[in-house]
Amino acid sequence: SFRSLKRSLMHDLLTGKVVTHNNAPKYFTWDKSKQRYEHNAKTAVVKRIVRMFLDGNALYAIARTLNREKVPTVKTDTAWSGNAIRSILKNRAMLGEFLGAKNFFPPILEPETFDRVQALLAQNPSFNKGKPGTLANVFRGIAYCTCGRRMCVLSQTKDPHTKKPHDDPFRYRYLRCNSQGTGK
Image 1 (cartoon, one colour):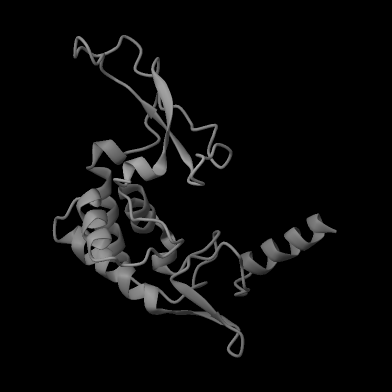
Image 2 (cartoon, rainbow, N blue to C red):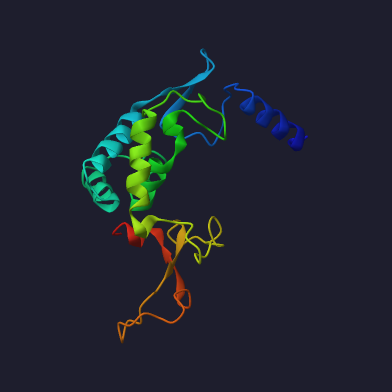
């Protein structure tokens, strides 16, 4: 059954066994002959993103640069976004971890570098998610635009007419196509 298969997979992961998994980041490739993950060409893009971020580039500036240079994204054929850059930078897979299993992937970064990246991300208030009072996006993975892209939930914190903050920052929430955020 599905549950026993899931239990078996989790047991394998927690005991340190490296197994192929459909949610592995696309900057790793499963080598069937060696029965392990290895870096692929997309790993170089991830390393470049880390270098650009540590050099002081903003998340959206990195995304604009990659889009301007027509660098393919690591996940799909969509455009780069600040959120995609942030997701890559926050992913512990760069340390070789996956679903609680250490040494699952070959590491991309040293722990000190990863910690430095996390400290810089924590200083970025617009991306500091999980703050008290933040609302979850209940439409994630459910709402899609007619163009096929995901819809994201945005909040309007200021009244567009008076330019004053709303009493309730979550009063005006709306859905917007992800492609609009990437300039399309």
